[in-house]
Image 1 (tube, protein in one colour):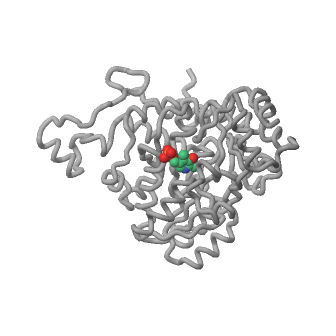
Image 2 (cartoon, rainbow, N blue to C red):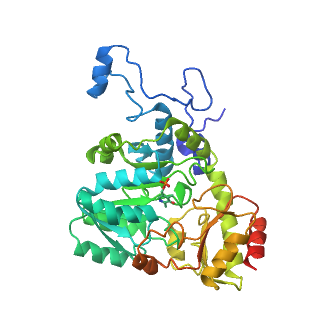
Image 3 (cartoon, rainbow, N blue to C red):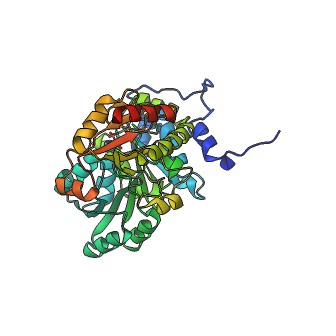
Length: 407
Ligand SMILES: *Cc1c(COP(=O)(O)O)cnc(C)c1O
């Protein structure tokens, strides 16, 4: 029989097997859910060694520090984010109770009283955290359009104390793309770290670590889990970096670890990540073309369209297509946006994204209402902008729904 080494699997096969480990004591096929707060020590010595992080101690102590189901998820996310890299074994994952827990724990531990250069159009809560909470922890931030690498370089000159550059691989809501490879090099040259929120792209489309980023963050609430059943987050980096920056200790003391049930649901979702992303991106490409040719639509933002300002860059750093997220600007502005959202029948009016069903929302009044007016204007978040998370329905049905609701 031909033996297939797991190392030679395609990415698609790796998503199916990433969370599988057939070493369960009862031979359970799917991962057991270790729904426990604490762990029993064989004796005092085993407990004492565990606390002292010594060899031979108990492997688990308390589920805020670590849990076997959560660790399965951490391994799976790390495997996919470092897929195909020659040093993939040195990467590790950390799972969190939300994307924001992952992002804030990551930023606090990595920025270390230093300066952060962040992308201007960030996820609303990340933007608010950097602007309003981080300064009280000694972390200052300047916001620049990271899709222009030159601006990042200029900002690094202005702020030699920069410890962290932070961006999103596909930025919400205008779908701008940054040159992760070039920015990672700039970060290295300036002794700073690069952290990339890879929620929109997922490792199916972009692997920031392979392009030189130091840390990847996820809201696994979205595509990784894929079915809208939980709130969760993750970080992936070299284990040595998390050790050096005490990220583990920050997670322990800030208390943001994922729960076992949510970790299990996310593991279950990851099995179909490739299959879902394939359908999301095929559908999104068709919907984007339909919108681009619709006379009521002013502009469509989708990295797969030739009209997208970073289409060539997207083609060079993205694999297997351009993702499932589209934004578009209606000619009729705010009123037209409200009309569309109140008349869709297949698409659901809801924030969040990356679900199997199509979700539609209005950034100006919803997800980005807490973002500064000036930042919103600079980032192109206008009153008539609509954001669509294209689901895995038949694209023709999504198009008919939009066509009907646009009129
Ligand atoms: C949703 C989201 C977050 C926040 O994640 P939660 O799981 O809601 O805490 C962060 N970044 C991006 C890009 C997101 O879409």
